[in-house]
Image 1 (cartoon, helix red, strand yellow):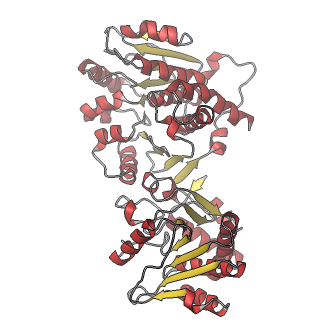
Image 2: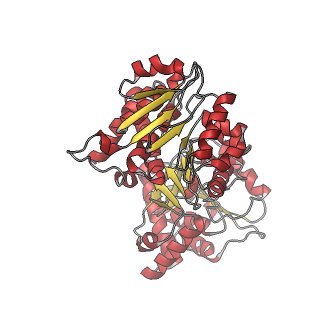
Image 3: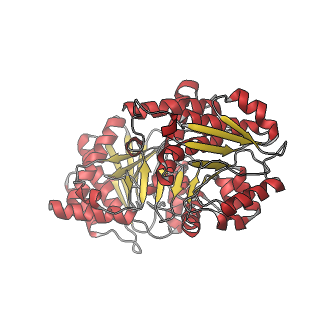
Amino acid sequence: MKLFTTQEIKSILNETLKNEGLTIADYIERSALGIAAEIKRRWKIDKRIFIYAGPYENGALSLATAKVLHKEGYQINIILFNVPSDPINEECRRQRDQLLNSGFLRENLKEIVKDYRRPEITEQDLIIDGIFGSELNRSLEAAYTLIIEQINSMGAEVISLDVPSGMSGDFNPKLVPKKCIKSNLTLSIQFPHLVFFLPGSQYNISEWKVIDIGLSTKAANTASFKYLLIGRREVTRTLPERNPYSSKADYGTGIIYAGSYGMIGAAVMAALGALRSGIGKLTVSTPICGFPIVQSSVPEALYKYTENKDVISRINPRHNYDSVAIGPGISTHEVTVNALEEFLSGYQRPVILDADALNCIARKPVLLNKLAPMSILTPHAGEFDRLFGEHANGDSRILKSIEMSRTYNIIIILKGHHTVITLPDGKIMINSTGTPALATPGSGDVLTGILTSMLAQLKDPVLSAMTGVYLHGRAGELAEEELGSYGVLASDISKFTAKAIKEILDS
């Protein structure tokens, strides 16, 4: 699914309104009906509701919502901000006047012109946050910050319209979550915002829902975009049904360099991930100490050892493998760093680099210049910072990842709750699957195996990255459904990868 920036959403909506002969007032009225319907579905009519309305479009939307809820019988109290330095705009004024003309009591609408007095709100009440939405393009004034802090401390459930006040709809590397509304439910009109899937939103957005108000999707379908949310529909297109007359030779070959003394389990996890996701032929290469473990744990894989007993000392594929992956558990021993440098200096096809391969590069950053175009790097936040410097938050890390993908012509899979894939052309893909159950030792090694398998089968690094992260996330979800979030092992993730693929093919 396409994800649009705030400006792109605004352009699409304006074009849609123009094509349908609608005004901004029509859009707000229709949106208010949808929001009120969702509130009515979730909360009973005896719920006391406090609405914080800002001076712009989000404030107008919250006032229009108040009008609908008032007619439904809800007890509504409104705090409308109309300070001289930030007066209400025309649409907000129109909605205010319509509300008062509809029979709404003036005493229940507190218009803040100068002095703000905190209302008596209890944990049993409901707050609708319509102060600012994605329209905010500046830092909040101290007075608004104080009000937001008060709202967050009241203990009442909070619904935010558009986005929680204080946040933008897009990247915000300077975001201070505690200075933004912490919402229990965020209701967005027609489209989800990019911020819903960014790491910085986890403190402020517990649940979000798009209110479909029936606008035409023609403008959205034809709009250009830089961001893609990876869902089942996207992955279904990359995983065709297998030909009944095919053999293992039709599903690619791959080799995984993994493991060191005490870390051979990483090689086993990666191998299981590759085999459970359908690779035709897999070879695992470890130091000599890994031979009995790999052969007994994963007999379906071919085995190739390097000369050193304890660490990988040479990376030299003897065959023309469709995919090569390096990194799980290989250590950062000097001979391993040198082996990686020698390999990268002569290998001209995309390679998958994970875990200790990334830590080896962090020790010798010049190796970044030796990566073949469209190679795939799979760092978690710590590994990313070791490679590219410390970052204060997830948003700044993603922005840096976009820059590094472009600079080195590589694909970066930045692992997290919503794993983000950045591409050399500046586009990003955000994964829709995942669960805390994936936060278990060896989970990343399984992902490396899945990516190895996908690249061997699909041959396309971008499609392989997209499909691999989706399958990994979905496998974690399926494992959690059966085992719970505490008890999932990496080996379970590989097992449920096969079920994730079956689910996609059966849909």
